[in-house]
Length: 82
Image (cartoon, rainbow, N blue to C red; front, top):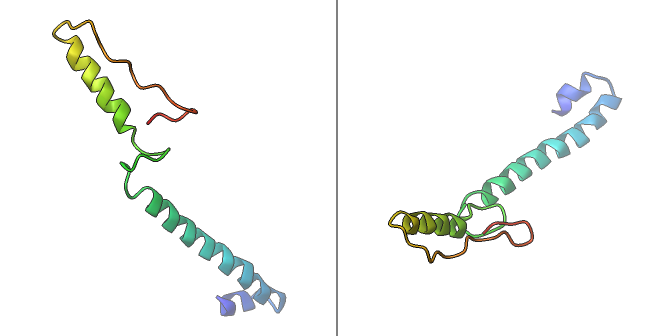
């Protein structure tokens, strides 16, 4: 990259430093996002809300035969549905 930035002149060589840092930052962020979203069932804030999905399915299945004593739906805690 230094040779490409050198074509811009002597000051252009110094542009290679922030550009290299920016490119490295993009790759690190892509790695972190990939690691974070690798397992969507860990129970973290941005994961698939399996407990709420299972409870909704349970409520729907119990409603089908006409059962009236149904469990409560899972409510979000601090804006996060688990």
